[in-house]
Length: 50
Image (cartoon, rainbow, N blue to C red; front, side):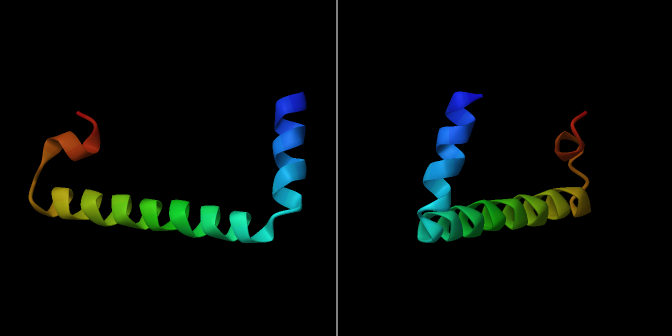
């Protein structure tokens, strides 16, 4: 729990790092969503976890 508190404290003092992390993980999520949609449209069963 101490590690989590120290990370939160560090992020509170570095707003630019927080912004970069949010944008990075947001783009990764959007890209994964797009790829999953493309795989579904091509009938790829592995995209559904089967």
